[in-house]
Image (cartoon, rainbow, N blue to C red; front, side, top):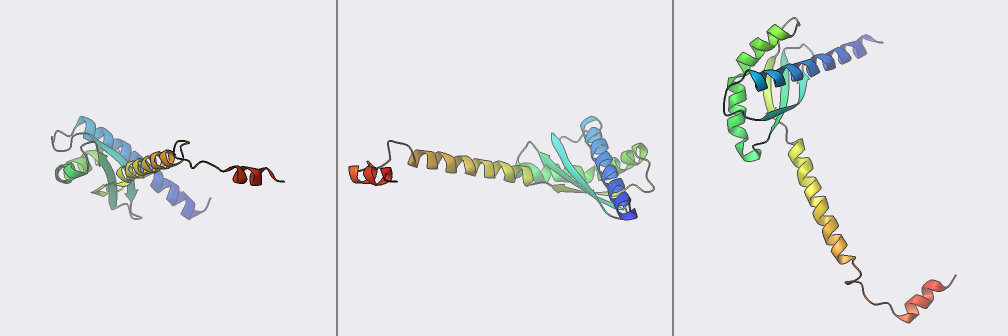
Amino acid sequence: MTAANRSFSRRDRISEQIRRELAELIRAELKDPRVGMVSLTGVEISADYAHAKVFFSSLSGREHIDPVLAGLQKAAGFLRRELGKRIAIHSTPQLHFIFDESLERGADLSRLIQQAVSISGAEDSPENAAPRSDAAESENEKP
């Protein structure tokens, strides 16, 4: 295993541990009503472990993200301090919270696909099909 692979896997392990610990801290310790039900979808940590982008989604929807983000940013210092007590790394990274739109984008794409399938299904139904002439049928039967 090369040094680059080792540091990459270590960074992944630390990112995942930060995500798990932050999720537990937010669930159990954070009392800010603005935050509510938040799901942490991922953590990207910088090469020097000084900064961590924490991606989150919320059940409250896209229109209520500003108060949730404000609550998370206000609690970032508390969360960083508590994270430092739980994780043994040289320096605890500064937390930057970013709304993860991928789940909502995925739901939007799924809805569009369902609409396209239902429209396509309605157009292809036997009721909407044009009647075939006997000449067209005899052409299809030729080898």
